[in-house]
Length: 278
Image 1 (spheres, helix red, strand yellow):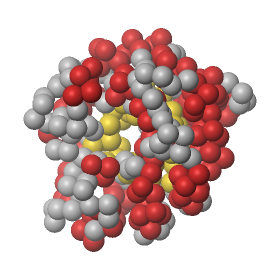
Image 2 (cartoon, rainbow, N blue to C red):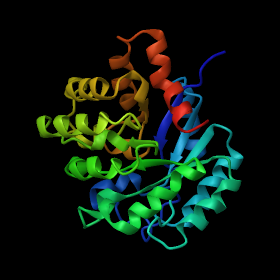
Image 3 (cartoon, rainbow, N blue to C red):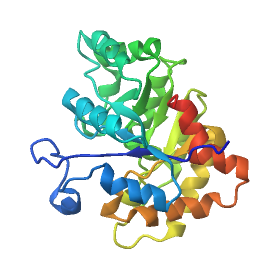
């Protein structure tokens, strides 16, 4: 039986300037609608069977939007949604989403929080502690500067499945690697933490990146997490700030072509299927 190949990180939206305030003037290419009809053909071109749709707006209406899309599009295999994990009724909201099999986990856009210590707030930690009993995963969306706090954060939850989005966003454009590598490896030492190889092109020079810019960063992630705790994600359509779907896919495809077939099968789909219970 063929193992499904999964894009474990992408987004859909009806563009709304009031909702998508993170889109700056330099991101005009993103200020339009991106929907399943746009993505399906891109997945097919790259021989991918499905995707995980990840929230891009922090409101529960986003969950409804993504669940509706998933109900109509079989290739959307799972959803990473949002609930206010700091709220007193967080457990109640998590229980509510148990009725939707495609709701696989949640995340918070920690990278946009003004407080660097946001993830260590007691109310947030309390919300995170509720996830595992419902079988939910948690996506950690951070900048490299958050890695020391992330290490402290994950130590509280040894049984909670975590995945680092976008390799914790190393500054590829400036070639910064040493501190990121050291801190990421400390996080990766915890076996319940996984990593998405995604979001690289937007951390590089958008107009002038070369494939070889990414090799040393890919080497670090593979060495740190091993082949069984990494998964592919396009970060489409955000990736289009720096590369089209096929270009960002090609970077990763070329790199992993050196690996054996069983290792490639793990990276391209098996790991995501296991992590997200697809």
